[in-house]
Length: 57
Image (cartoon, rainbow, N blue to C red):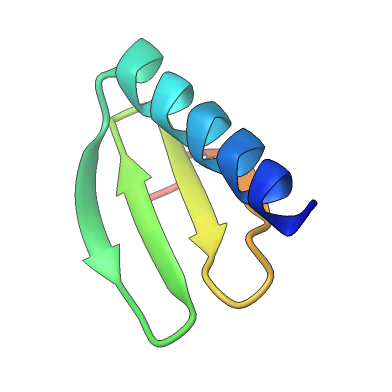
């Protein structure tokens, strides 16, 4: 069951990265962040949570 959840998160992450042509930019203690000029994708490595946000920087 956990493997199914991990697969769903990984597939979702990979499809978003491919769709927006993101590049990995930052790795912090708990997060991996990919981004473009318009949007960023943040994955919390502890919980697996994905957030897609506007790039405000």
